[in-house]
Amino acid sequence: MDEKLKRRIIMFYIGGILNALAGLYVLIEGASFLPPDTARILVIVFLVFAVVDFYFPYMLKKKWLAENAGRQAQDNDPVQRS
Image 1 (tube, rainbow, N blue to C red):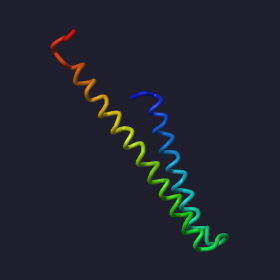
Image 2 (tube, rainbow, N blue to C red; image 1 turned 120 degrees about the horizontal axis):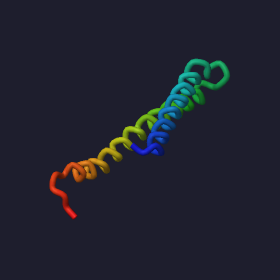
Image 3 (cartoon, helix red, strand yellow; image 1 turned 90 degrees about the vertical axis):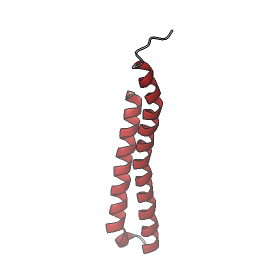
């Protein structure tokens, strides 16, 4: 896998973890300094972004594997074609 793609995937995972932690923090401590409706909206936004951040690496890997499946099948072809 390309190093640039690996780095992008890792950054999505880090972003997802940070969004999930921020969402949990607002869920637990947000009621003490925010109105309940605002805290609820922030929790939903953070958790939705966390889900998206974990879904994108899955799609990137799936796309990369689909693109490289044809290349790998060509490389394993016993008949050399010019």
